[in-house]
Image (cartoon, rainbow, N blue to C red; front, side, top):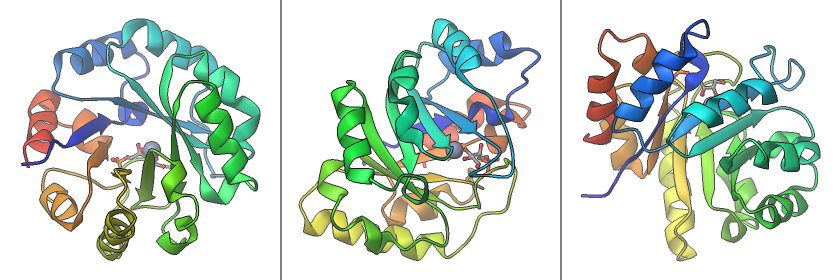
Length: 217
Ligand code: DX5
Ligand code: ZN
């Protein structure tokens, strides 16, 4: 059975009481913590920035998986690194010179991820796949937690899995948006390696159990 990388998204946490939620994450089976940074330009919402990320870094014992929903993410490589980020994830649609951005992320000592919006086909990654550590397929339109999973994502996972296997790569496939304990099995069977879940975890009466369920689908 393959190891599933579970990365709860802090976006749905209680920001008035982050310490409590981070303590829950530390005690959980989660592998990483997913941080959603939004600029109000690339997506129609603003979430949080570096001061919060630095606070999270101080309290969180899990590696930080940072999903940047911002334009020109290449401008912030050093600042993202200085927040203790393990993996910096940029949108394909937001970085014109993606190859250079990926190189800069690696030079800064982080793993590099590339995210695709639901309307962007996986074929655009053909020539960058061998350079990156992870592909994040958005299964909702980015910007908000608690949206409904877009079913077409399943076909995208299968196509991407074939591309990765054909090139003999070990690139991680991560899925983000509308993921829960009910659809997790289908996503993993289609070829996903990592699941992000925000509302399914933080809005649950027992988040530790949901994280365990996602880990053991
Ligand atoms: C949405 C973010 C997600 C979000 C997922 O733009 O990228 O990480 O937190 O939330 P859920 O799991 O509630 O769909
Ligand atoms: Zn995200």
